[in-house]
Amino acid sequence: MGNRRDQIKRVAAGLFVEHGVAGTSVRDIAEGVGILSGSLYHHFPSKDAIAFAILSDFLTDLNARYRSVLPHVTGMREELRALVHSSIEVADAHAYATEIYQNEKTYHGPEAPAEIADAVREAHTFWIAAATKASACGELRAGLDPVEFARMLREGVWWSIRYHREHLAERCDEVTDTVVAAFVDGGAAPAARPDTGPPTDSRTITDRLDRIERQLEILANSLLTDS
Image 1 (cartoon, one colour):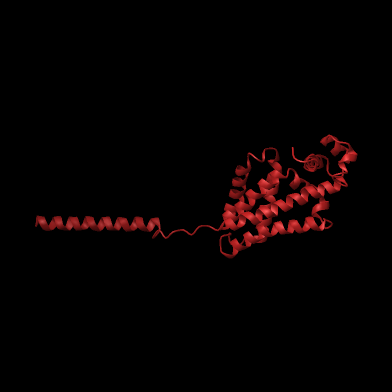
Image 2 (cartoon, helix red, strand yellow):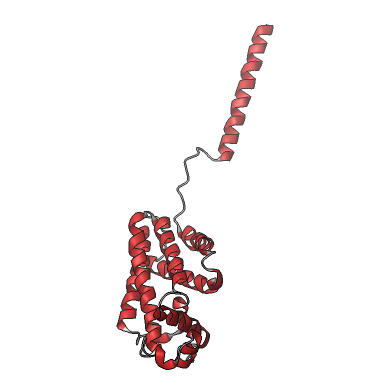
């Protein structure tokens, strides 16, 4: 089951989402783990320290995953799909970390711990850079602000994770495909239409004139033969 510290974080994460950090006591966490409250303090000095560790570990792994996958993909769709898929996989490995961040203003407000705030900003830069590059090279639909597009896509991923939390592992690819289809494909610049010649109506008129001319030639040849 891994070490005791990891077990404490797993149990605490579930309680924090259900009751909030403020509504969860050290005794609640200790009872969930099956240890005495005093024993828990050997691993963490407080419940707030547990919440901090949950988010810090998640963000560290998230940014590491982003850095490792992006060099191996090219183009807007593949880069953003890699970010979406990586986010879901890391969120599954760190159960409820995203929900705790969403729920607890202490960690995403102006008073957020510097380490958490810096890690979040770093994570955002990957999304913004991918969207900005796509905008610059014409892959992103004209008129879409790349920073706002990146924010909406990123937030869509985190709320999708929250909605599918209980079955996230088995639905990772499905959720990824749905998010990419809704946001990325919908935001892609329209493909250039190939030159298919004159409009259908013009071709129809031209074809009819050609047939008439051929019929006239046949009729003229027939008249000459008869004479």
